[in-house]
Image 1 (cartoon, rainbow, N blue to C red):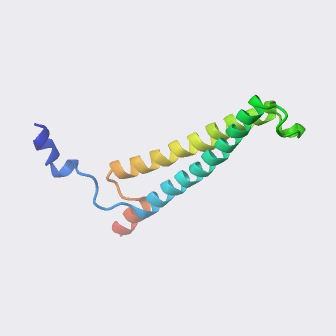
Image 2: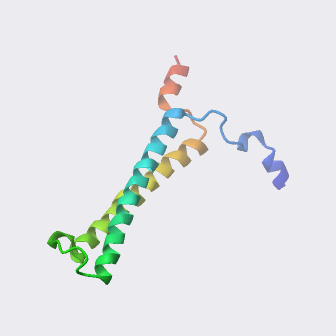
Length: 108
């Protein structure tokens, strides 16, 4: 039964990938990667400040101020953008429905 389902032509992915949707999804993932790097740098600074509190003697780089920057950057910057980008990519590639612009051109 599994072999019959694998050879069913209706269950295969769409041969035409909408380049605009793929581009938007990858732009979301690129921005998410940027925020992941920023959040990781803030987390590294947090770890340094937790172990050596006097490493940077600047008041606005205290552990209590950098920790929320790290958590908010990773949560809102990385995870939310990565989930939206992946959702756009997965929905576009599994729905087998053309983009709205392509559909309107085809119906003319």
